[in-house]
Image (cartoon, rainbow, N blue to C red):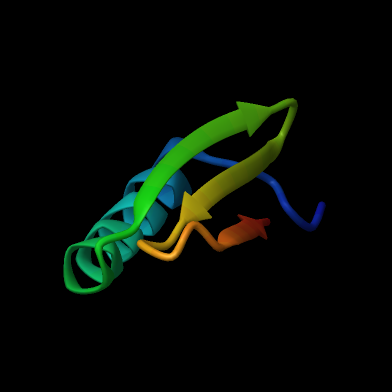
Length: 54
């Protein structure tokens, strides 16, 4: 099994988790799918960059 494989289901689940987090913390976020990897780039209200990928 390839680690970091990005499925539509993963994207949806991840998106909802981050959306919940973002609403509480005022985080702006963008999601990209690069090849088979999910990338999430977030900025907190203090403009701190947060990157998550799987």
